[in-house]
Length: 226
Length: 325
Image (cartoon, rainbow over all chains, first blue to last red; front, side):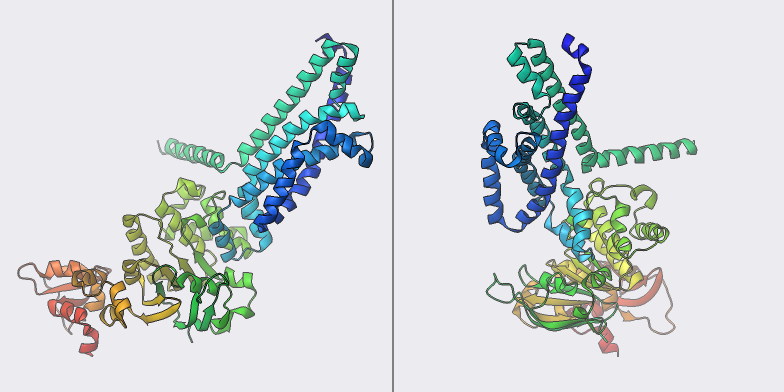
């Protein structure tokens, strides 16, 4: 633990690099996954094929995939980000498709019948209703990204993996421990944070908040009455 | 001019051997409550959904107030037609108030006007705004959800309302009370309503006129009483309960069978009955000793008399109104 106390700046820098890779990868992955999912919703056959391919990509070992990507992106963090985008696609797309499919057709019919444009139906009905499931996908993808980004250190991308690989090379057990603990903490914290966001958008939670509000209103009314 | 007119409307689906709706011509007058009735697959929902263009006819034309609906912007058209479906149609992630505000928001009403409208409508459907505005659909009973559904359909103050088996998913007792409310709402609002159901009792209770459909075709279009008394064929007779006299009685309202009060009529101690009660209830009162006539009341005022002869005439298919005239 001495290492942690003596090198806070280094650890902070490595954590920053690590987060950067994960966050950028997730943003890119999300922007690809959303339209892809909407496309897949239109055709079941296409969905089966694409989800199949993404599933196979997910099973490629990370080192192998990174080596495959090196010729295209170079020996830097771009390769790692590309790999993360590919890995998280299956998680994001599967959850988005499930979430969007879970919106009852009758409800979309009602929205359409009341005169919402396609865009309004998407923003006001379909997307908010699918959001909790989509966010669950984002959370899982985040944790996976934090884990896999550790490998990045081997490919010149920096990040907390640096501590692990240095530790092994120099036989410095303290570096290994600190590296693993910080990676684990990062994953745990992000997981909790996203879980909180997910719960915030959950209809069931909204109802509990509303119920509390109603109770407090009736209580105030009761108090003013007495 | 009819409020809604179907002219030779046909709808074919590629995956169906026969037409879902087959050359239907139908005119609905302004302010009428018209029920589309028939077994499942008869085309009633398809016919309904062509009015707000959720389906486009394969051929034929639909007119609203004389205007071909294809000439209107589809979203504008839909915003001026109320639409109620089974309870799944409420948006679960929005509060009652937000649900009702859907169409006003699409019409870009000022916030104050929308808020006022929400309170007005919740009061109208008997849900105190202070208590229900901020609730979510999941916090309401099936019947309450359906009332919010009706309020939401009325929000934009449409002339036309389409209702697709709106009370299909609620229990029998709630359904009856929702139907009663619908009847009294319609008395106040006089909207032009198309209402789809497969429940004969519901159709006979609510409708000014009933469209009976089978295999995509309109079999009969008439008032409930005429359909009961003069079914055009065995299918309609069977559907509406045919020779079962007691059942027929329970489906006819006293105000439809009564005769008008004679001039200088003296209100004495006659037993009374409400105009919206049915003839079976009237009959059991008339069978009491020393009762020869019932006073039919509408909102506490006597409007007509009902005797055993009236009931007999109604079931025989001779409306007393016609024989008196």
